[in-house]
Length: 118
Image (spheres, rainbow, N blue to C red):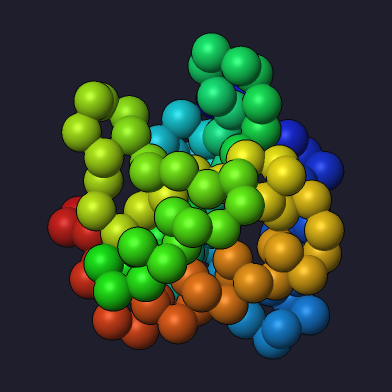
């Protein structure tokens, strides 16, 4: 499981500054941040390029618009993109404002998201 500890700290700090209570869990090949026991976003590393990237749960309604943002592409682990999830490469979240946008987008969908089965 590869992820950048600096980026993990950035996400934790941003969530805390926004007053969001979250937890983190190693899953999906990286580190995921959960709100209300539902995946909000996460970090992993592209196995081909070794670039750090965000995994963001934006939901099906925001998915098409999210794909138009800088550094964003469909989240695809298996050859079939996961609906409502995107990868964001560093050029799309390097700035604090960009990271906050992705967190806000994920937080908008979070109340509508279903919890994973245990």
